Length: 113
Image (cartoon, rainbow, N blue to C red):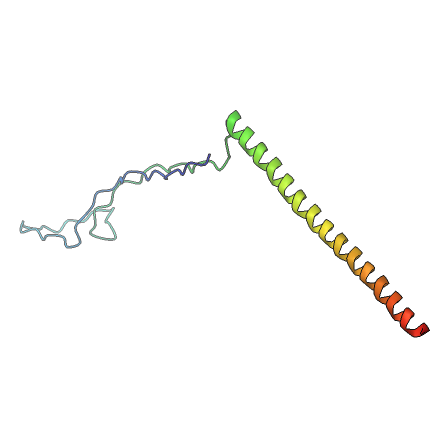
């Protein structure tokens, strides 16, 4: 699953023609045919369409175990991070409340004198 797969390109099926076609020195007699080509290139016959590879993921039992273990680990890590953030907020709030109580008592003590 974690090994990269290099796509396999199909082999070329057409005939490679040169860019410049040599001219024939043979006597060219005009002849009329019904199926004249639109261009002077030799085209390869149409090949059968290649079926696209399926996008379905196939997992082996070991791969499935790795995915399940990875998912459970991710849930545990995210849960731990969220709980620690909540704990940090709670401790900060408690310390601010204690500071507020101490400052209030100090200010009230100065006003009575």
